[in-house]
Length: 342
View 1: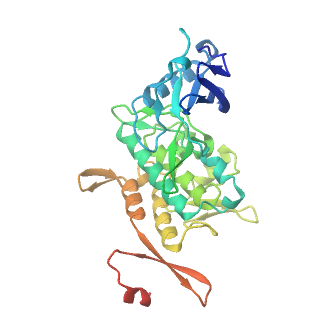
View 2: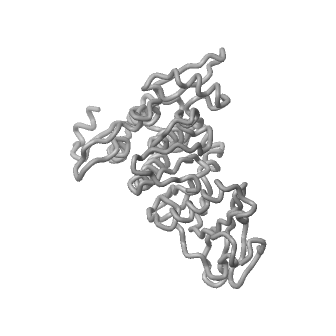
View 3: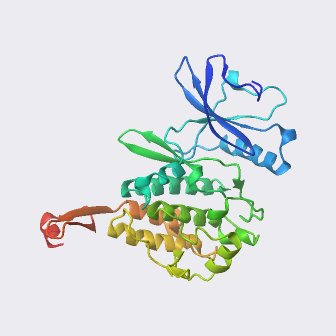
């Protein structure tokens, strides 16, 4: 099918444009016979693209074809009727996620102080697992942000959060070091601002920034500052600072705590603060907590901690006199008499 052809071809109908930009566009297509929905991503003709953009597109098609993880958007076979014409760039067919992207969710008025605790748990578990999977396949994403996380609603009222847009993804070389400058500025790791060589820990910074925003409703470090000021000020943070914001006097205040209000119970706030202190380290070598020994081999500490945090059982107790909810982390062997003493 020609890149200029839109509307319908055979049993397939174009329903809407899901996104468009300098690279091309993503369209939603519907099969009238089977009821199937798929997203088709097309790039511009090669002659209309910069060489770097063309390389990003070829890399995305290549990488998507070999990935298989519940929390990474799945590539599907391009229907014969939607195949590009001879001489045109390849197209990418993907599963359609009807929940839209995470940015749309964060922009809802009810989420101005962050997402509900249940959604935070599902988001961190799913996206964290996807990043660990990509890294285990020697791939860094390099452009993690809310716009590149989409939602798919599944059974049991659960949401799968899926990473999309691997146009900036890169396979790690033998030394796991890269030097090209890519990504979206508000979520970039600090070393990228000064064109230093970097590794997979750039994804840790972006992921930590994204999680902080999902918990609080805003980005962790001077979200309105221009890039040059951002770098010159945020570099003054201590290793354990997870936030820097302007106060009423336009002075910068660093913090090691999550801002209030948010929708996490107190125990989870404490655990996530500890985790964010690892993810938002300025020093890329210290970021993520390094590699630790676990049963079965080695693992990045940050992903191990996610698993430990999500395994927690939180007991919520209504304090009638104080009209408040008290929350306690408990193990599976706690007994009712012990609960009464909490």
